Each structure stands twice: as C-alpha cells, then as structure tokens.
Picture: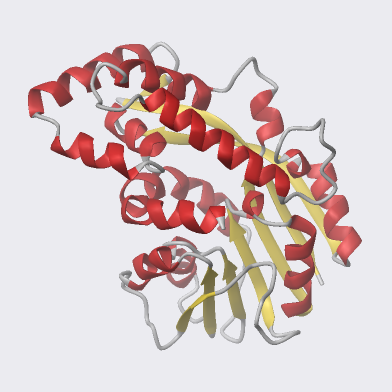
Length: 297
C-alpha cells in the first residue's frame, strides 16, 4: 500500500521537520472544539500523535482518546510522546475499515489525511462509529485553490530545490522526486470516489463537493468552509527537509555532507527562496488554502 510505505519512510523525520510546520494549522481546527470529561475521541490517521497530544493539553479531563494509523513506524513515534498511555490507545488500523464499536465516539478528528483515503468509504465508517449527536472535524489542504495560481509556492520551492541540489547530490533529486510525485498522484487518483479521469487528484476537497459527500453518507448539520493559513519555515534547511523527507537517501547524504559543502548548498537555495517567500522576522512564510469540515451524526 503506497501511503503505508510513504509514511513508514517519513516517520523518523516527521516530528522534527514536518510537525512544526503543520502544528499551527491544527490549532485552527482544534480551537473550534469543546469536550467534556465523558467524551470519547478517535483520531484517524493519527501519525506521530500530534493531534492526541494537543487534545490532551486542551482538554485534560477528556475521558478517553484513541489514535489509529496504518503506519507502524508512525505509531511508534507517537508512543514516544509524554502521553498518559492508560488513557490513550494507539492502534494500527485501516481508516476505511474501522475495527471499532458502532455508536461509540463523541468526536472523530482527521488532520491532513483525507487525501490518502477512499473518501466516501472512510466517511461512512466514521459515521458508523460516531454516537448519535457526535461530531466529525476534518482539516485538509485545498489543492484547487492552490492550483488556481500559475503554480504554487510549494512547486516553486520544489523546482528550486531540485535545480540547486543537482550540483550537490550523488543522484539527481529532480528525477527522483518527480518519480515519487508522479507515483503519489497516480495512487491518490486511483483511490478517489466520484473521480472523473479529466480532473486533477484531490478535486473532491473543494468545500461544496466534500459537503455533498458527507451528506450523502448520512451526516447532518454539515459545515464545510475555506480558509487560508500560514506555514512558517524557520530557515531554508527546514524547507529542504520538508520536501526531501519522502526520500531517506537524501536525508542521509545531506547529514553526511561536509559542513562547507552543506553551507554552500543552503546558501544557494536561500538566495532563490527569498525571491518567492515572504520573510517575516527571519522566517520564510507561505499562505496555504485549507478546507475544514464539521459534521454531526
């Protein structure tokens, strides 16, 4: 399974390099939630456990938290967090086939993961395990608004990275990363519900379409909206790791690169990145369009 392999590779670097970027986006989702001591919460595609940790900090009296993920290495990363394991359960499980009791959870969360799933099947399973009156809260990148521009900053940075890295790495990052991206997009396209062949992957994350899918499986009071948030990269090295995390070979080669060569590479990358990023208090900042969904059973 592609997404399992992808996140198995990402796991060692995910907490260090990707979590700091997406953590502020998650705060936007969690700020709308209210939990009591009797609530049971399920976090789907929990990964390294960031959502569980933030929920526990915001709602210390919440009765029970469960996190599921298909990637065992990601769950092992979650186990390293300082979480009260007598109150938090981590389980390896498919999101589209939840081996969980029906009508059990008062809240289900999913952060930046919906694009990996068979959307309608996953929503149906979530509806099944929610208790009557329970809520689903989802946040995902909105690639349609991202692609409305000529090409997004994420792609600009990707091509800048490849262009600069060709001079410093043994293998050609451009070829390697392009191959991974093509495989990723093809796999994602193959798993979509109601995905016409002439539409780009992830097109069903437009708010209107996602709202319809949620209503079709049986959710009520569906509120799906668009917003824009910022991801802040503290330096160009963070940008490099954010993009290169799916190819551990380059992480290893970068780590073993002589200090002088590494400094030249980062300097060359920084000179180009500054042309395309806002620079706020020394950090590189990019606006990202998001879709958020809140729905009730």
